[in-house]
Length: 291
Image (tube, rainbow, N blue to C red):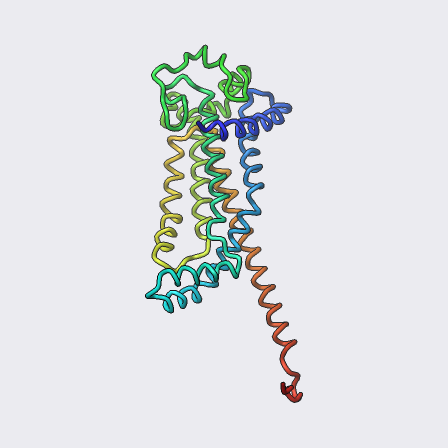
């Protein structure tokens, strides 16, 4: 059903793994983890421009909020005229309310595709068909190691299953580590902490809204979402946690850079407006021109 997502994600992951397999070897855990990080960086780099465009749109929207409130007050008894006037104001200033859906949708699809592709390396359990499906006849270990996984052939499937990092299998989770609990936790816990801290800092860097919904979302972003990142450390495979933590760090760094860019643009705009006002003002002692 979602092969349109799974196949491109597996193709990109395959390319990066082939590259990192050259120095490390195809069954090296570091080669697989670097491939996951490179995939994330590739996708997020492609989404920088839409993210910056949306940040500018949101900044303009916040600046227009007083005018929007005045329009709402002026057309309180006419919802249609109110909506029309607000849309016209947004269109005049180039505000696109739904432009931010593209980066969010892209990240969600990539995460879903990567999670499924990585989990599909091990189809010996019931939930082997997809994110929302299960099977009553999972593959045996021997059959699984001999079955391709999208663009990954059987040798690459075996390479992934044999890959370890510091003694921990890449597909292992803390909740199902068994005798390898210490090795898996040594990787999963720092990754979950990194994701939680980065998520919290991203919320602190985000602009603060003034309405009730924004206040609720800020509380969720500051505390609930980071707590969710910590919980993920117990239930997500190590290789997926690498993606999760890298994505959180990238988002935090991107938020910081965008904030600096918008601040610089606002300062430049204010300087330009001041210079224009001074240029149009009459010189001291000069008689004002009469029209």
